[in-house]
Image (cartoon, rainbow, N blue to C red):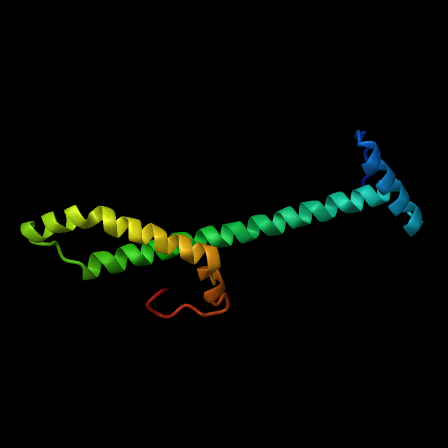
Length: 128
């Protein structure tokens, strides 16, 4: 055996149209069906890996955004006196419904926050 590991056998069952497409593609490229299938699998795994990395990035942005918002909100919002707090609680349902509607519109047409954030921005001294 050489320094490279020997390939291992894998048996898969394909629907006839998929097998036909695989065989035709391999024949056009003058490659084996095995080589074409392996390349497709590797490509698929790479795509999944890139999607997962993008999802991780988006979740990271969402978590940081929430943390920044909560810090900002806690630092700038003082407790309401009881009569105003009671009025605010009474008005909560309408304000929440307006928030959900605005969020729905934002998600439907964008641009998305992740597109607005520059990935190559250096963090400021305060962020470090």
